Amino acid sequence: MLSSLNLIKEQFQLRRNGVFKFQTKTHLKLQMGPYVLKTAENHSELIESFKLRNEVFNLEFRGLTKTKMDFDKYDSIFDHLLIIHTETNKVIGTYRVNCTNNPTNSYSALEFDLSGLLQFKGPYLELGRACIQKDHRRGAVIALLWRGIAEYMKLTGAQTLFGCSSLKINDTRNAALVYRYLQAQGSVVEKGCDPRKNFSFDDFDVWMHYFKNPLSTGHQEEAAEMIPSLLKSYLKLGSKILAKPAFDRDFDCLDFLTVLNRSELSASLDRKFNVNK
Picture 1 (tube, rainbow, N blue to C red):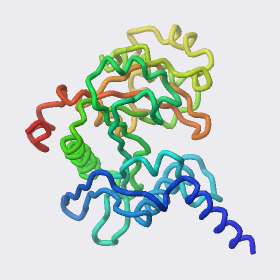
Picture 2: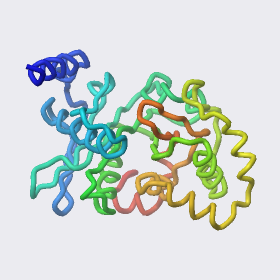
Picture 3: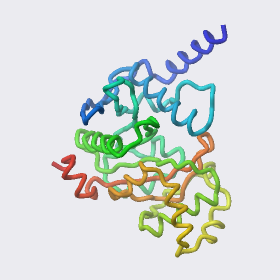
Picture 4: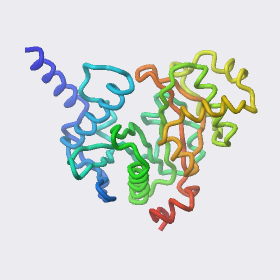
């Protein structure tokens, strides 16, 4: 009986969030080795991405045991890039994307004041909820995700990419250390996109004062270890951090607001994916 009630509740929530009315806005399909990247074409594929997000965000990172899917009201209005492992026909990677002319009305705007983002040229492509199944976290899969983003950007005419990059950090000390490290690397360009009050770290400025530049070698190594592969790939492509980190208490993690101009993409991405051609 309990299982049936949970299923009814789950179906109600999916319907309430518009999942069963989902329609793809921009169609895309690419293949690289044993992987296919494509946009989700129907609600069944969308639900598979929710299950993967639950596996990574809730079960693996948060240690929850009673959840089955991760979704919200924004999913029905985003497109969803899926990476499918052809040998198992399983969704092993996902990234949701939404092209908009008004970034101040977005998921990221829940955590940050995005008025400063309007300094960048639109349209804007918001990226979010990126995850890769643990057994497939390798350079080739991340490269395929970026190839998909580049192709999607070309199809929609997006000029500026933005979104929240999450780190598994939930304390002020480590948040300040990583931010100070990124400042020293030249990866921070503050544009007045401060975290909203409910998403601010307590005593952040105190810890920033503690971690004065130059950081010790030990602190540099410690900070570098806390930066995940996906954010490292962002930064290698020329992305910048626009503000102090936000603390997402629901997911118990730190979020950096990242931005990447299409005109500033690295030459390697241009050559590989023909972004500007």
